[in-house]
Amino acid sequence: MTDCSTLDSPQTLPNPSGSLSATAILLIEIALAAGGFGIGTGEFVIMGLLPEVATTYGVSVPQAGHVISAYALGVVLGAPIIAALAAKLPRKTLLLLLMGIFALGNFASAIAPGFLSFTALRFITGLPHGAYFGVAALVASSMAPPHRRVRAVGRVMLGLTIATLIGTPIATFLGQLMDWRAAFLMVAAIGALAVALIAIYLPKDKVVEGASMLRELSAFGRVQVWLSMAVAAVGFGGMFAIFSYIAKTVTDTAGLPASMIAVVLALFGIGMNVGNVVGSRMADYSLNGTIGGMLGFNIALMSVFSLTAHNPVMLCICVFLTGCGFAACPAVQTRIMDVAADAKTLAAATIHSAFNIANALGAWLGGLVIAAGYGYGATGYVGAVLSAFGLAIFLVSMALDKNASSG
Image (tube, rainbow, N blue to C red; front, side):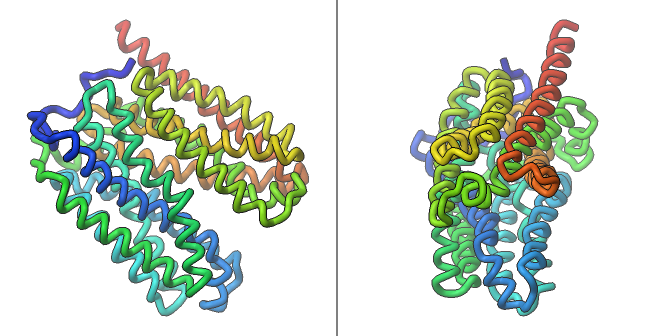
C-alpha cells in the first residue's frame, strides 16, 4: 500500500476544494498530455532523420548521432537543476516556462545554421524535459482522489506513449517528404499549442508554504528516493537494450524484410500505450505490486525474447509485450513522489533523468554483447539481467519500508 500521508497538502492543490468539474480536470490533463506529446515527438523524431541531418551539415551519421546524446544529457542535467532552482515558482508558471523553452528550442533547432549550434540547441531543448513531466505528474495526481492518482499520472504520460505511435511517424514522414527542419517546426508548433492550452485551462496556484531550493534538495538525503531512481535507471534499461537494436534484430536475426521494421516499431508503440493504461489501473490497486510484478515479468519475457528472436511471430509478440513493460513507469513516477515527502518536485523531475540513464545504459550494454559476437537477439538477456538487478533494488526498498513501518 502507498503512504497517503505524503500526498500534497491541500494548499498545494489546483483543486483543493473540489471546485473543478470532471470536464475541467479532463481539459487540464489533455493540456498536460499535449506537452508530453510534443516532448515525445521531439525526442524520438531525430532518430529517423539522422541521415538527412548528416547530409545538411556535412558530417557522418555517427557524428550526427551526437545530437541524440546532447538531448539526453540535457534531460539528465536539467531535471534536478531546474526543479531545485524553480522551487518557489507556482506550478502553472513553471509549466508554461518549461514548455515555452521547449517550443523555442525546437524552433531554433529548425533554423540552426551549423552542426555545432544544432547540437547545442538540442542540449538546451532537452533541459525542460524531465522537469515538465515531473511537475505535470504532480499536478495531475493532486487533482485525483488517492485511489485514482496513478491513473491521472498515466493519462498525462499518454501524451508520451501516443507520440511514439503517431507523433514521431508523422513528423518523420514530414521531415523526409519536405525537409528535416519541417519536423522540428511541427514539434515547435505542438509545444506552442501546449503552452496555450496550459495557460487557458490550468488554474493559477500558490507557491507551497515553505518551498525553497534547500527543501527540494533534501530529497537527495532520502535513501528511498535514491533507491527509486536506481530501480528506474537499472530496471528499465532492459527495454532500451532491446529497442535500441530492434531494427537489426528484425532483419538480421528474424530474417524479415526491412519493410517490417516499421510494423515491429508500431507493435512496440501499441504495447507502450496498452501498458500505460493497464499499468496505471493496476498501480491504483497495488502500487508496489505493479512495480515488482512488472520487473519480474520482464525477466521472463526478455529471456524468452532472446530464445525466440529468430522466429518472426515470437519476435513480434515479445516486442509488443516489451512495450507493455511501460506499465510500471507511472507507478515508479508516483512512488518517488510518495517517498520524497515535501521535496516532491525535485524527485518527480529527477526520475526522468533516471529513465534517460536507463536508455543510455541499456543501449551501451546491448552494444557490448553484440560486439562480443553474441548477436542481436542476445540483447534480451541483457534486459533480463538489468530487470533482475532492478527487482533486487526494489526488494531492498520494500524491506526498508517494512522496517520503517514496524519501527
